[in-house]
Image (cartoon, rainbow, N blue to C red; front, side):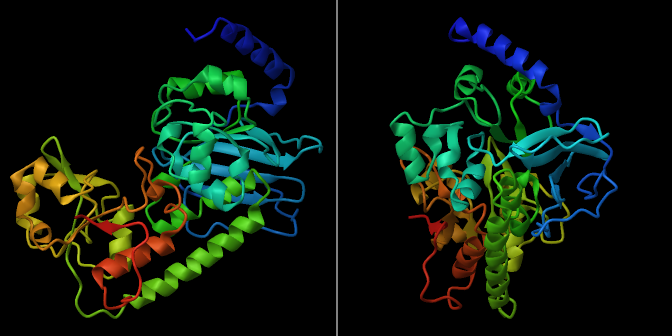
Length: 400
């Protein structure tokens, strides 16, 4: 089943070790809290520490700080009244906290080695000065960060499989033996995740990609930081980003003319248009744009025919995020119908790949996830160039 015959032996050894320390490797899924609802399952809230992390925007997790441990709860966005994961973090060298609660994962901190299953988790680790803790990454060839890319090229950081928790290289992970694996959660658990859980690895599920607003997504840096005892650093960083974001947003509040925007791209004849509560649409709203679906309540994308999009957005002033297109030629090659939009004719088409490399790595999926203030500035620069005449965009660029 695996690449080398030693794999079976290694897994048996792991399982034997896990049985001897079963209290330290309990599975992390339990029921009992409403979707995105933050509340503690423990009644004693009297124990406090000097620094408490506060979660302000993110709905997907909560952190409850006590004197001798931290309780982190991740909420299930797909099922009502279900908690996805619960973690109890306690210092290395200290006794295991005892609770009557079931189905809790106990993790000793700070973590010294971590594997990441999504590029969106790289940004928080790099920002917190934890890049050296990364020992493995899925789709490692798609990394944008130059320092990590060099390590991948030199064989210091191996690739651990494909995207979306698929085709995970179990043997490579067993060899690396990371203290923590940070991965995205999906509505359906992949087989590789189950294997890792059975072996006894600590899986930290990050749901930043399910948040509806830029600041909520960025706030997941606090979730990552908690496992490394970097709570204060994450809090200080996020407070600066939040302050910057709100100040930049004020620049667009009084604009008189709002540029109309077309978003999305067509795949196999279906155009996927971001709904009114979509993460990307939040940027449009805060940047002072005009978008025909602002009143819509959809969080994801709305499938439309290309003809329907032409009817609604043919005269849009600006086109943002046309799929994987990186040039006007890419759009022309996709079909003449896409050249009919006013934004294309006026050379006002933009995409998110300004900071990308030849291997397909993009900083949009790494740094941009925790720097919504810079992204919002890009949007305002595009929509209202008169507001920031001296600034150039950082993540987003015009297609030529």
